[in-house]
Image (cartoon, rainbow, N blue to C red):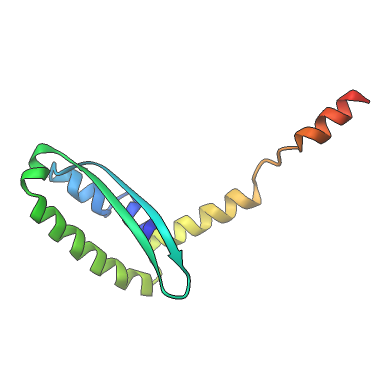
Length: 109
């Protein structure tokens, strides 16, 4: 859920709020993870002046988006697939940083 809510690409809640001139920034964070029960996700939205005047509408849009996101989690959503693929590629092709102590010992001999 954190990845869906924090996504800033096309069809994201952030892009929609930004297009309405309601939001400048959106930040999400997992505050606690209870693997058998739930995750607690914090959502921080920096509103524009117009967004602040319409904060009830912003909350309504966010609530509707979260309801829809629950359905997406049941399906294979492209943002989840993209995140998973990028994570796998980053791990597979990650630059292996040599251990600094081994490097110092090797240079000293």
